[in-house]
Image (spheres, rainbow, N blue to C red):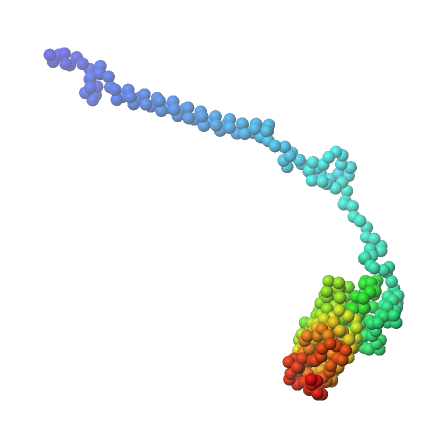
Length: 334
């Protein structure tokens, strides 16, 4: 009995040698499988690292779009003419061609041929003081002389008669006379812009300060409120046959209201209040049939009441706009 039991060989751990050990067999198989998977994974990674970049290079070599910067190298400049179409940015074969400046400057568009200063002066004087015109101005009046000189300087600077000789040119002349009359000669302070000035040259007079024209370019309104006017009202008003409104209030105008102002029968509004005007309001005011506002308060003017005999209704100055410092004389008609 003891002999049979001792006949089995035992391992060091006491387990017979002829009995299989499953745990040991499973461990060895697992190690073998893990080693195989590792080798396969390394093969896949190596294939991806080597093959994929090669495929990318082949793709861009065969199917990449043409016209890239790499395919259109800019050739260095050459002294020989370029033949064939230019694919890249156009390049100069020699230095760029330059146009030599002309010896005679190009003439600007003018209404008449270029004239000498003497011819310009003579032409303007002959037109402005032509006897055939109903519009007249005293050449010895300082404001008239300055206005004429301004027009001559304007044309001389442009080397031509920039504007045609027509009714608007006479209107331009009249506005300049007006400016030189209502503004005294004085030293302007820093920042002040004298009127008229060289910036007004070759500019339509309808865009000058205080002026407003109709669709035909005819002056219909003069409006210069509180602009430090310290001169006198001009006597030349027949340059403005379409004038309807005058507003020169809140200034320092002196002298009388000129008789010629009442010849503008189309006037509708006259505002001259808060000035230093004096004298008598003419009886010709009754001829202004369309006049609706005549405001001359805060002046030293004297009113003589009048009635237009040939008119169908009495025309009186409006007393509601002639209050304060206005002297009224005469009898108010019934």
